[in-house]
Image 1 (cartoon, rainbow, N blue to C red):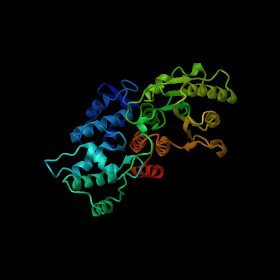
Image 2 (cartoon, helix red, strand yellow):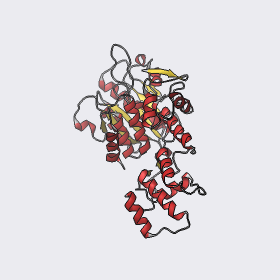
Image 3 (tube, one colour):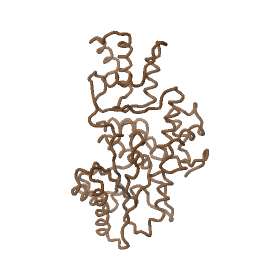
Image 4 (cartoon, rainbow, N blue to C red):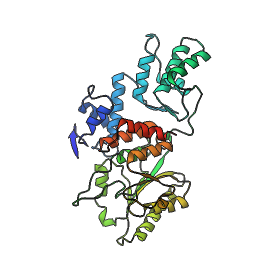
Length: 372
């Protein structure tokens, strides 16, 4: 369900959830959040998705801290709010010396564990190093040992393996029914599964939100007469727009499978240098469809996510990732470096805002278990 705020359509409880999850409930109003998020309204003009509201929250946090708007360095990901907190805690004692984000990131990079995401302890280690070196004092072995003892981090100059997630253009191929859309009841199309809109939008736009549009293709066994409402449903639920490839009037499963394989193969042939993440479910033949695609285009299939809606034989899932929800899907893509840690966490928070029961501790556990 949705409501109107400041001329924009939003999820019924989503703005309040975003404010609480970012510690803004007592510092900013819903109207302020919506106004900030309006600058990011792109996927479905007039409707602010959870991802767009989160970007608005990021802007509010930066504005409240008087900080610049950059959230990702050229080579490393980090939380804007955590960076600001670390700078306030460690680097404000000298009124004559102001440290830039680049300086803190550059120092923290020496303490990165190699995954390309600078967590709080690594940013703290970098800030402690700057406290010492900014006075013109060389960093000694005893200083490194003290910082290591305090933060638990190791100082090893590191470069993330490969480009940051936002630098890679990932294509998306997705089934619709029971992958994105739960079963209809009484002829009413339900809301999308929690978190899936945030995840697909992130893949479509990239971690920095500046990726080229047009990378999403939807494939369905529905015949053309049964997809007339799909574009509106996608828009209402904050899912990225994309081409919808349909089935035929005939509906034997083997025919639907062959049609899907042909449609997906055409997309991959048209984009020979692009990798794709593919989404399906266990209801019909998606596992077989994507197995055939992977066999034919092994270098272009980055991941296959299969939504678990009914139990099937494990042999049909070889090479695929079976997930119960899209928080798990985000964690898997984080493990593959398709999205970064901040992105994975934002999908999980969005999924919770949209009805998935998942605690902060469970989010942390998912991230830890899937850290690359």
